[in-house]
Image 1 (cartoon, one colour):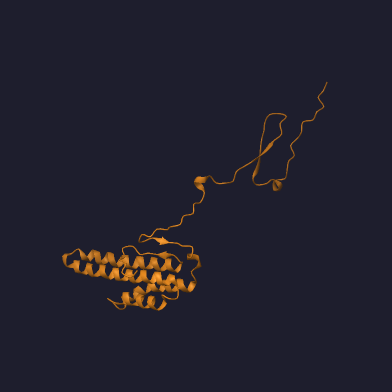
Image 2: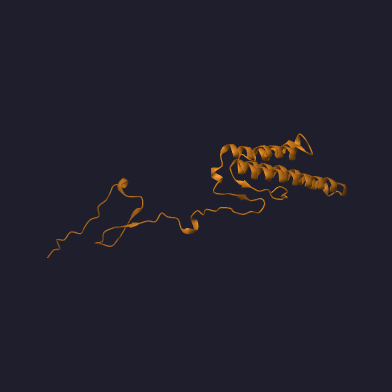
Length: 183
């Protein structure tokens, strides 16, 4: 007696019709149908992107707030100009680096709280850098001041440019190494 039962044959789908998340496992034993199994495309938790928000009040940190994305372009521009106006000290040594940010901050501080905050930061940083430069000049008489003058100038330019870019992007930047005279 012959067995007239037909073994079911797998139905082959054209490549375009097979969903991307299914793969057919090949089963080599006789009489079994290939099984479609789901292939996970999710990343494990260790590879998942982690959102981090910096909410640190220490100097040199960038603080984001819910209002950071809502700061209008004009306010960001004036905050950036407040920081960059410290470069006026190159043209008017000994006073331009403090007077220029102070004037811009006083004129624009009532327009937006972001300009007020960043203007205070810019003025405080310029006052602090002036104090550090004067101390470095005094210390240059005992030969330690020359490297300090160079370091102070480098720190001045680097932090000033970082603050200007961060302010233009709408971040609340706080300078490191700054004495807070104006609060």
